[in-house]
Length: 254
Image (cartoon, rainbow, N blue to C red; front, side, top):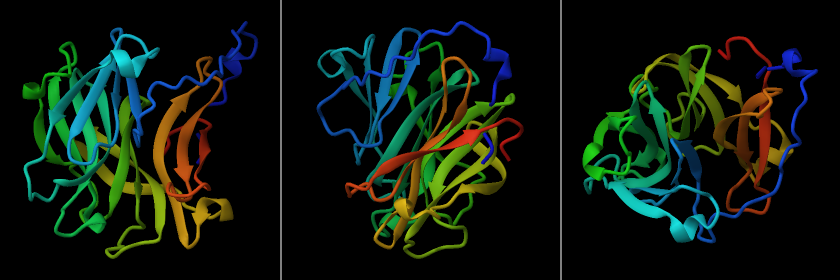
């Protein structure tokens, strides 16, 4: 994937990078996502049976000082009540939205699909559980494709949805996860066909027979010199789990 070379920044006086690592919680919080908005840090992560948001005005001593709110629980025995994974909260077009993967407990992991919660206006707090409603499946996604780890990118004046999925037309358990990108017509609807932008074709992206690309996240450097999609590869249950990056070099990503 060709993702900005930025010659415009070549002669700027730039501050040095701070590459210190800050541990914000000692608790195991799989699939973490942190958003800063209007002076507050919001963190979502995989809880399994619910959607929970932690929030605080600083990342220092975050776990001790943060507020913890459960904003939504799925009704039992529904197609989206099992294994809620990798929730992400986004402020889009004046409203809060939350994206997550879930499966049907009767079918298990192979039924994982992407879902959306619609929240309050962006100028309101996203922590009020009564302000959230279940929208349903993310519209426009392939009906039969296993999909997890979805995130939203705002680029070139539009929205793009990036996620990890099994190869298209795969309906049984699959040993390969790939990264896909699809255009969005709105925060709750995709349009067109998903484009595969990464597949595990290197030995270090495998654990045994499982080739895995997952957890995509679009990042930009503070000085604008580069941007790209960072993703995890190999098995999360192994010591081989690692990260890679797809650099964005400009132009329309599709």
